Picture 1 (tube, rainbow, N blue to C red):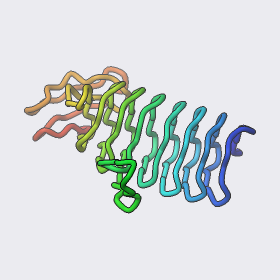
Picture 2: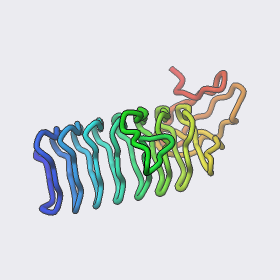
Picture 3: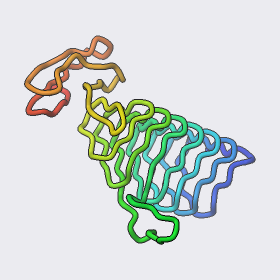
Length: 192
């Protein structure tokens, strides 16, 4: 297995890229970036120095992953979605020492043109709809929509909406995977 790097891409010396990863047209990977196996970076992607990307992540066209962002395994970043790293930017004020950490946990999907405000954590397998703006932490398996984003439901690991209420106690079997999801005390997870 090898790494595919398009001739127009720039990969700075020192960048760590896992086997099977593909880096496409006009993408720039900075020297301090750490990228896992089997990742795909579409056209015109930027990956900063203090970025960690897990295995099997898919980053679509026109996405910039700035310093202090961590993507765990199996994260999908839709086209033109945005990560910020400064909470209150001003052109005349340097805030490079004020970057806030952003953590995107395993299996998260972020839709096209969504914005993830720095300092937030997106829980496992949460799903951020296209155009949504995340400005607070997101629960695992939560479906988030709107500006600012609000939770409107729950999503399965398979990427299908679960027929569960937002609150209370309930169970639902995913028709695609057969997994049973359990809602208890406002948290969704797989019944073990």
